[in-house]
Length: 266
Image (cartoon, rainbow, N blue to C red; front, top):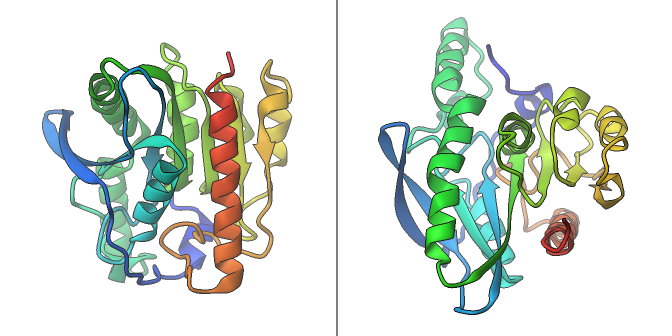
């Protein structure tokens, strides 16, 4: 089943951007294969650390999609320890073929999605490799929280993982222009959420209705970025445009405040 949202397909190709990431790369292992994980931020013995697992959009890692690294480094500058896994293991969908147009490409995209984008695989990578890595890396440091933040496909994965694994509770999750989010997904999570659709994404009404019935409802955050296209914070965002950069900054400021507060929420 092809699960790329209409907003994702309609928003056009990624916007090239130049950026040199400042973090490092670690090799992790799950599902019988290795994958890289971008790590940025510092941990200091005796100090509390708030961790965020960053889930990129459908374009993954490449020379075009540099904004996800900018986001990771900005969160690190704000005091978070950030881990961004390469869930696609160096095999993102080709930029030149998105959205898939021919029947052949659509079939190939469906096969790629089934291999690289399935929720159960993403959840396994996070729970079996990324979370243990964060805990091991922060040995001797007080770990306050582990949250999830995702864009587009990543937003979908954040809600999916938080609802799928009932044995583990994240401190909070955040979706910025998430794809295919539903009230049913929101009803399954056990932690506060931040939901920020773009003008191209469906409204969050059903999600808010589901979350309003949760004991943590008052901690949830919502904002419609009504002037921005789907993907503005990640691959589709041209951060050289003043209006876009202003809303990117607003979204990231909201995330910093949200995850900071939720690190103390129990």
